[in-house]
Amino acid sequence: METDLVHDRDAAWSIVCEFIQSDALRRHALAVEASVRSYARAGGEDEAAWGNVALLHDFDWEIHPTLEQHPQAGEAILEERGYPDWFRRAILAHAQHTGVVPETALEKTLFACDELSGFVHACGLIRPTGLEGLEPKSVKKKLKTASFAAGVSRDDVYEGAELLGIELDDHIRNVVAALQPIAGELGLPA
Image (cartoon, rainbow, N blue to C red; front, side):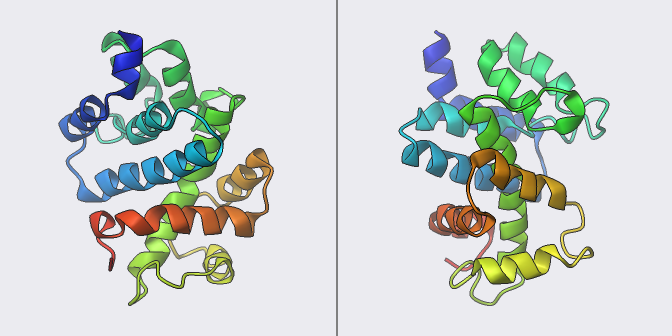
């Protein structure tokens, strides 16, 4: 039963659509899913399960929009729906304020991809060519502009690359490449 649930993307997407009305937040879920799936593929991990964790990482943000509630209250909803401990723990570990430290490869990857996927998406939104030709140098320049995508934690972006044990430039390239195939779904030029 657990195996089927953690691999059932339709069920995960149904939860996203049940709880998230905002197109922007749905796009964020898709972007993080694409990035995490890409890392799972590259590392020979369970792409479907990792992707579903990423897809659901912020599903409760609209109903629990405070750090006191998100993602902790959402974790309880996923538990009620039958998602296993490791799946829910990975979601808790993506938010530093929970005190759950990313330890597994999945947890580190979700943490590393969350903020950067959102930031790369924002970079693509202001470029006429979207993600095409987006280079790490441009992304890093935007990271230094505090007013651009101000909600993105720069510290989490830098710490994410460190957690993965790769250079930030490589992490940026990986995320850009992961988002390119779904550019149209993200509202970007395809």
